[in-house]
Length: 98
Image (tube, rainbow, N blue to C red; front, top):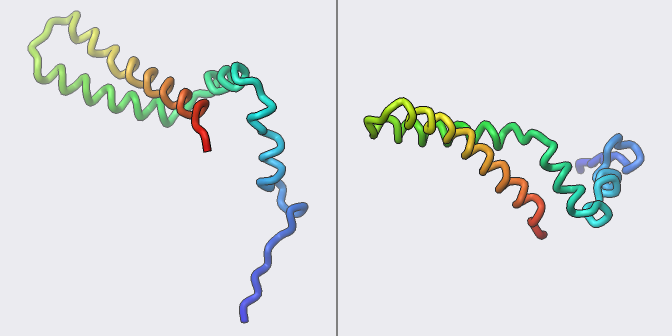
């Protein structure tokens, strides 16, 4: 027979019980939570949006014979898509319900 040893809640440095009490969304005002999420970088979402935007820009640039102004505008596309994806991610985090 195998014996399973589980640590007590007091032995764990960061138990789920302690974490849930330190970050209780019902006690934080909505605008303060939104400001905190806007301050965070969300680097994975930004990089993902930049890669997707770069692929779209490359496809558009390859398919068209455009001038320098159009290529400069295409350079803004990855930045715009990463910003949009980050805003959608923050909106999803704020309005997600269990």
